[in-house]
Image 1 (cartoon, helix red, strand yellow):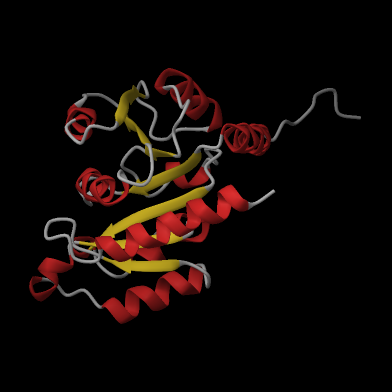
Image 2 (image 1 turned 180 degrees about the vertical axis):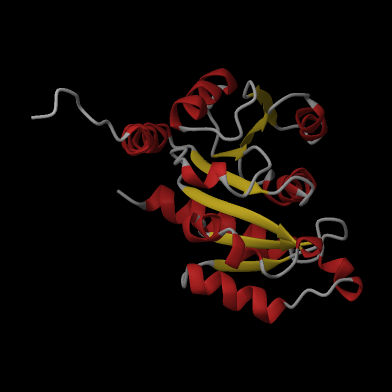
Length: 224
């Protein structure tokens, strides 16, 4: 008989986090604040996309933003110029946020009176996808310069996301990026994923994305 136990640590960590994430979802529902977890690679245009979305949504929804980075407050400074409530979260070197870290950010942000809270996760296509943050909706951004093969290389983030935003469509003529292939590859991973081609720089496609998000918030608020 073995004199020791074997602990599946990674499995335990994920199970504990999943339970905490479910609890956080219930807490956010009770407070009426819809939480979005936004993921992407560095440089994909998360913050620029957020500024355009905020402009399209803030007349109808009260919005708060949590900017997560290993260091710096560059993104929080950019978002603060939009006039919405924002805080910067430093992860201390960690490449993702989990449910407890998200809850800590929510407490510091203060969500009283907010309809929509957006977590801009650390720039990374791997680690953030592994941890449920307690969000009601997961979105990710894939930019045209990154290539249309990313759903094949980083499957999990496409599997866990409700929507894929394809940013920087204004530079499509300069890159070997196939919109049909990226849609096919993403739906291989997740048949139900919504796909929104946009240019955060020019604003193209932002209205359609904003309209869809407003509908998601409305449906969520109407649910028992």
